[in-house]
Image 1: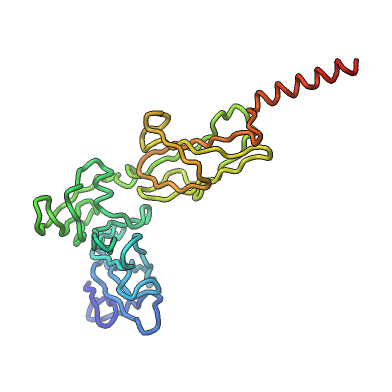
Image 2 (image 1 turned 30 degrees about the horizontal axis):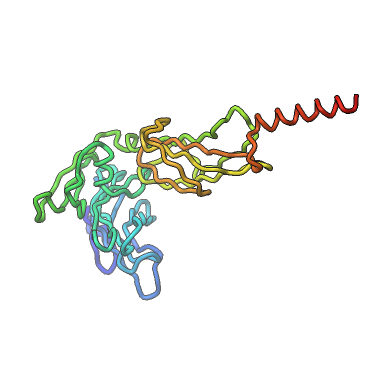
Length: 284
């Protein structure tokens, strides 16, 4: 099986060249290039002009359908899939990041979406702060070993190799716990979480919105730093509502409400009882 480009991406097998087409694109921009193929030839990766990019967007082709892989925020919208694992489940390539950083290596799976490889490796406990990984050029058949090019700590361009654990996607998937402070009283209000998922992949943005009940006002969020749930030493406050947080570890967030008139519920109930008692005595 051979893949490549002849105006657009193609597969060549047994003397027959088949066009893979292109992503939906802007008028005047039509073309694609196939750069990697799975072991049995059923999955092809590369880049194509698209509605999103006149430079190129990474794609995954399977069963006659070309699917865009998107782009990470910042810089030009420009990405390309350079290689794919034997079973077609893991794709590597590059994505144009911010204006000053340039290209960054990415890894993609259906479960994780497109992630910067250096972010993944750092989340797994490897210090790559002095490295710049420009592109992931190839991946092993089992999808665990990735090689590419970058800049070494001492300066200058150098190739690199990264080996991921088999369960790497699970290890960078995090739980978000959202509670209401003083939740022993049910009258405060509610919180919606969007998207509301069991776990969130590294870098996923989550929006929290507090909805006070009548007579109640929202006060603030208590935000605990990743992997420090419930520890006041790693807690900050935010009065904004709604807020968006980025998942970089297991997180805990508490919504704090208050009575709109400034009286705490227990005190309000006490005053109410005393008032009724006084009224009863007056009538007696």
